[in-house]
Image 1 (tube, rainbow over the protein chains, first blue to last red):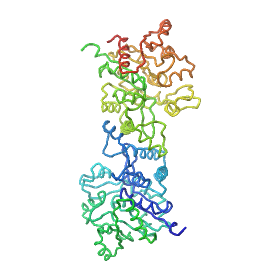
Image 2 (cartoon, helix red, strand yellow):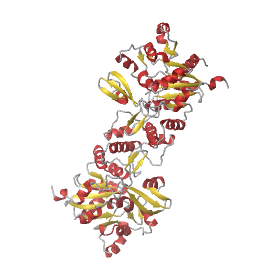
Image 3 (cartoon, rainbow over the protein chains, first blue to last red):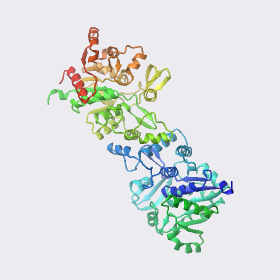
Image 4 (cartoon, chains in turn brown, green):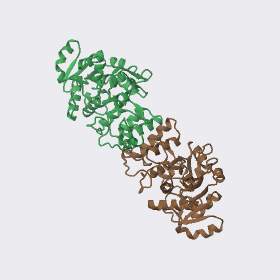
Length: 318
Length: 318
């Protein structure tokens, strides 16, 4: 037993991009070392079901059940319910796969029984063989709304139904002020064994911000001795997945990795950018940032593990 | 246009056996002539979904979508949700097919939106191309409980989970006293054009009784000039489907067609028994019953239409 195994790592994640790095981390860290906290501000109630897209994407990914081509949902999924729903004249814009529905039904039922989202997530993860810890950011409802040129849109309406076409003017997170971060997250942030907080290459505005903006989280991050490392979700002026780059443009931000680093500001101890953005590192370092450069594009499982190892190496381990 | 087309027919139905005759009637009667009222006392809430087994069996059957081999559910159904639910450690004793779930999700959502079961049933039927009228017996919740040697069991626990193994001592219909029959059913029973009320070959205790015992229904039936005709669900001392015969035995009733006729009593103008029970007819007639004998076993669509035609012939039409 060496010291490494006692150290703890916290990863903050949205959906797909975050889940990729979380998987890489899970391959090089022991179950008791790694905790992944997922955004729940894009959760929503659909057809009476509680759907937690980011929690599910991370859970399915850690379980090895995710659909890699599609980027969300389960591999080998079938769509019979949705086809029947179309025949019945119901809503079909949110693509609920047949196996995926079991997750939403089970979670909704356990929530109705009074269980916390934390306990339910733990149960579902155990059933799917996920041994690392996955936590929702909060057991309280927080809901992202997009202020857009089409008015205020619930996040999934913007993201899935309107396919990110509306022009973004801003964000609001309803319920955030009264929501509490999960006690397990706050305890981990206060744990002297917490070695690193990794902000995954997720959308800063709608995936990471809801977690960081929970009451007490930023303060706890700053008070912690843990190194805070973010991986840029912007590579060569574009987002690998999702609307982060489009949002930055619409918010009149430069669509660059260093704009993301400036957005996170003094919260970060280190910012990891992709090799294709290596030319940015000099000016970033000159402006006082700690920057590391590596391949951040995770196509293969090897890429995921390599980026995870690189990040842990930056932390001073492995 | 002859007089026949202005006459109206009401069929009272449980699940499978009733749905077969309802289908036969739908093939020989115009859409505006036939109304099928289904039992909703075996409805239940499962995994947060409102499930209406008898309404769905009749609806799927009239739509030509039912699984004929299985006797319930949809033809060509898939079971991905259930297989995933098993992996998640959820309940799987009630077999929810993937396409079937769309019906339950849609109905549950529309109920949550405040729509009546009558309006929802009409919407679902229209979407599935059912042109005859299908009505729930009531928009209010009525729930059958089985008093058994294993205590009081909700109907679906007795019927599906325990596969009718518990010994039946009696029945209770919770909510029945305060439930109102749907206004459309009461209006039809008061309609001078109502020519026949057909009690389908369904379980007298748990499918037909909940309808008949709704406040005002028996009185309206007796006040109506319509001929009341029941088709025996017991053929040659056995039930073709379901626990009717087992229940009769456990309730110390003779397991015979004439015991069913006596159970319905003076509500009936005519009782239809199967050819295989023809020897019963003499003594039944001697005891004052009106009895008709035909083949009541509906294996083919032709059988269904023939029984429907026979019944309508007894009414004095076709």
